[in-house]
Structure formats: structure tokens, C-alpha cells
Image 1 (spheres, rainbow, N blue to C red):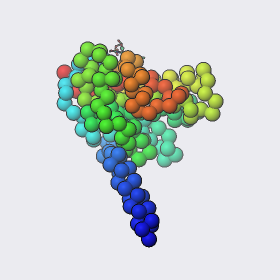
Image 2: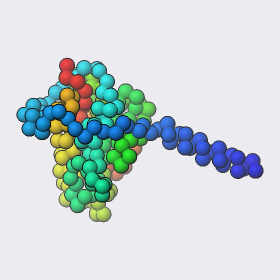
Image 3: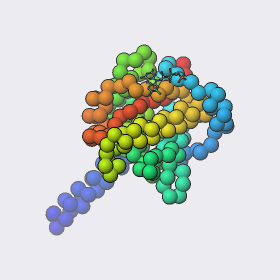
Image 4: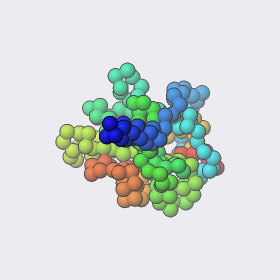
Length: 208
Ligand SMILES: Cc1cc2nc3c(=O)[nH]c(=O)nc-3n(C[C@H](O)[C@H](O)[C@H](O)COP(=O)(O)O)c2cc1C
């Protein structure tokens, strides 16, 4: 009896721990007043940000545009080679680092640390941005990783990066795609395995 109670308690505690590590985002608003052509006209890299936070609603709208599910068969807003869906998107903000789970529009916490300085890597005032999106190509999703899959990963990352640029413009946010970052620290903190390529980051916030 005692063993049964202990086992039940352990299961309950692991549920509570999982729940604490998960943020259910508000449903994304899949619309914006700005047209695609207005966003294309105005898109420009911004490197100076206000410290004003981005709401979870706006973050949800942005993440959906970046790589969200847009069809009943689970396909995404960004194309991927052979529909491999190898792109993973991470969010680093003041309260920790998360992975975006497109299937249920949630964030799963991976680190309690504020990793924004490691992403900014000392570049100007970029570390003032309230959050960063990190794009990772998980080449393990290809049955045989190799030079061509690395190319596919980089190309697929580019689609997501451009979705982020245009959605930021449409949502009144500012961003710049960046290759510069402290790869070693970020890979360790996010628990990235071999063949998970950290390719581009986007500071996101409001233009100063
Ligand atoms: C692959 C790639 C890597 C980049 N890396 C950085 C970077 O590390 N830091 C930075 O400030 N800008 C970076 N940029 C932004 C470019 O400098 C910027 O897009 C370019 O100057 C053109 O300006 P625009 O985006 O306003 O048109 C990068 C852009 C790309 C596409």
C-alpha cells in the first residue's frame, strides 16, 4: 500500500513539474492590418530596441507566422525539404529559455537562465531586446545526414527567418537576422545534440 501511494505521488509530482515547465500561449491571431506588400516595402534590419516586453499574445502571433501549423495535415507556414520539418525554434527571454512546440502552440522551458547576453555576444545594444528567437536545423530528422542535408537545413532556416522578418514588420515589431552569437554556451544551455545546427538568431522587440 505504502509503495502504491509513493508511486502515485511520484507520478503526480512529475505532472506538476511538467505543467510548470510548459507555457500554453494564447491562440495566434492569424491576421494583421499591414499587407504583405507593405511589409516588404518596410522590412529593414533594426539593432536598437526599447526594453519594453513583448506580450505572450504578440509572441504567439509571431511564432505562428514563423513556423506554425497552417494546415490540417500538420504542415507549416514555412516549407521544408521533403516536408522534413527539421527546423526548431527557441525563445530566450528574461524568464528563461524555451522551445516553441507548434503542434499545441506552447513553450517548453529548457533553462531558467536569461541567455540574452549569450545571444547578443556583445554586439552594440542588441542585448536590450526583450527576447530572441533562435533557429536550429535538426539534421537528425533526415534519414542520412550529409552535405546536402546541411544545405537543406540552411535553406529551410532562411524561410523561417524571412517569415520572422515580415511578421515582425506586420506586427509593429523590429528585428534583424544574426549569425553572431555565443554558440558554445547556447548549445549547452539548450541541450542541443550533434547535428542540431544553431544557424540564425533574431532579437525581437520595439524599435528605439
Ligand atoms: C545570414 C545572415 C547573417 C547576419 N548576421 C548578422 C549579425 O551577426 N549581426 C548583424 O548585426 N546583422 C547580421 N545580419 C544582417 C545584415 O547585416 C543585414 O541584413 C544587411 O546589412 C542588409 O540590411 P537590411 O536587412 O536592413 O536590408 C545578417 C544577415 C544574414 C542574412
